[in-house]
Length: 395
Ligand SMILES: Cc1cc2nc3c(=O)[nH]c(=O)nc-3n(C[C@H](O)[C@H](O)[C@H](O)COP(=O)(O)OP(=O)(O)OC[C@H]3O[C@@H](n4cnc5c(N)ncnc54)[C@H](O)[C@@H]3O)c2cc1C
Image 1: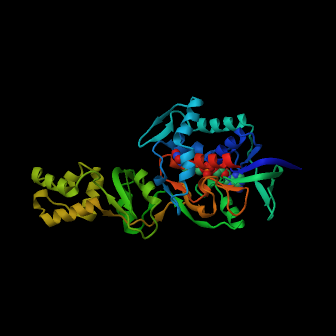
Image 2 (image 1 turned 120 degrees about the vertical axis):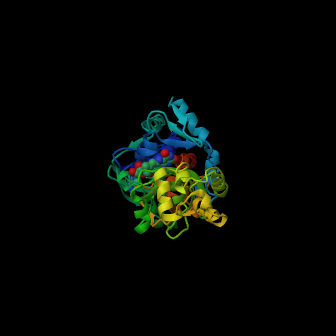
Image 3 (image 1 turned 90 degrees about the vertical axis):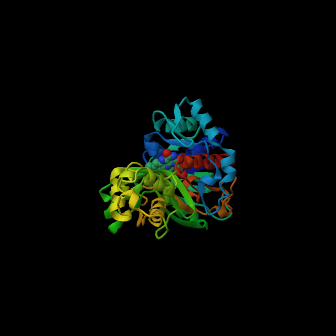
């Protein structure tokens, strides 16, 4: 038996649920098909279980995309304040952690519950544990026939909200990319983003036993810089500054770390020389970066002697190394731990105001499946809400 619906949404994640509740509120018959055993799994695990659900400072500059203009329209029409209004209406307590990042006080579960409640109130049906088996759409057709484990649907609009490839154990699939290609869309190469970087060989050996040491750095690569904590792990480096820069890094790219962010390294070294002339470099350095890390820096990269014994060219050399420490990463931890997938469905063939395919009327792509990827800090959910809302208004 085939059931006629207005819109069928494949993927019950952040973008899919937002699209569904938006379409449902307009009186459309909307059905969400989710193959996992529950909706919003990534929302549940996000932000350490407290979901960093938006960022109040969201601008298009916080996103990576082959077309940096694409995200502008949707972000302007559904802002962080629109989502915050819904969160407040549901009396979900939240707080700002830092840099405009809003987190739930209690649990990410409340965000999933809010979205599900809004969907149900809008008459949306959610089918969990339901896989799409086949989609039929012939040229000239005005809709889509979708065969699922729960029977067939005839849908006027089909919204692909199946997300990216990160965390396959949570239900991530390449469904959206494959479907896009099948309908003639270009899919830009995908790679893991917001992901720890790995080191190998002597680079790894030099830092491995410092696993767990954290310090603030400014990480720079390909013209982008992020200042925040770096964490040394047993396989490489992580922490917010590294996750952020990982989206701009590819194997072979030059990665530099300022180990004294906010300080003029030469000025600082000269001050130490004047005021602490008998103290050794590793001692003074150990007062501004973790002591074990300072020691390792001196053993492997900087050398060590009393401050008074350095001449100016040597101090300049030290300053250059400290403020542009070159770290050779060998790769990333990959999709297994990545928060997002860079690349995806090319925005060139989508309408930026509706997310509709320019090739196949009635077909929409939203969320992470599209080549729009946010920074760390609530930007990815804001894109999911905004793109889901744009499509939900248009279907
Ligand atoms: C560990 C972790 C923490 C994160 N923390 C944050 C954070 O705090 N703030 C932030 O902004 N972003 C965060 N992100 C990123 C954010 O979760 C994603 O960008 C966002 O969920 C993307 O929304 P989406 O709806 O496009 O995809 P998803 O939320 O991934 O939803 C896609 C859905 O489609 C389903 N699906 C896939 N294939 C099929 C299929 N063939 N049939 C049916 N269903 C299918 C999946 O099971 C999934 O439920 C985090 C990501 C991870 C992995």
